Length: 134
Image 1: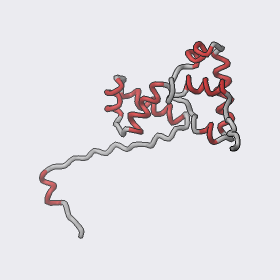
Image 2: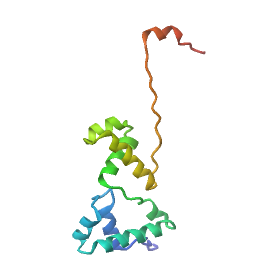
Image 3: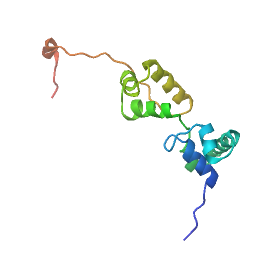
Image 4: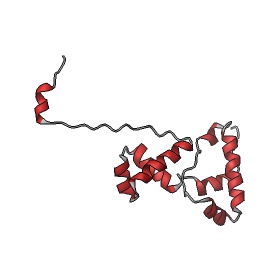
C-alpha cells in the first residue's frame, strides 16, 4: 500500500487545530501560550501555510481563518439564512456589527452572497389580482 504524503507538518497541524475557526478558534496569542512558542512563530507558521495553500489544494480549503465572532456571524447569516437583525439578536451584538463583520469576512476571501432587501406584503384585496396560467 503506498504511503500517504503529508501536506503539513505535525506542528502546522497543531497550530491549525488551535487557531482554525472549526476547531478551537484561539487567538494567535492563546495558541502560542498553549503550544509553548512565541506569537511570532505562530504567525510565521500560519503565513507559511497561507503561501503554500495557493499551490496545494488540501491546504487551501483550510483558509481563510475566521475569528470566533466572524464564524458565528457566517454560520447565522450564510449557513442558516438569518437576516442581519435576527443574527444580531441571536448573538447579542448590534445589527451594524453584523454588516461590518460580513464585510471583513468578504475581504478575507470567503464567499458571502449579497442579499437584497425586498419589502413584500400581502393583502386580502390582492386575491382577485392573482392569475393562474395552466
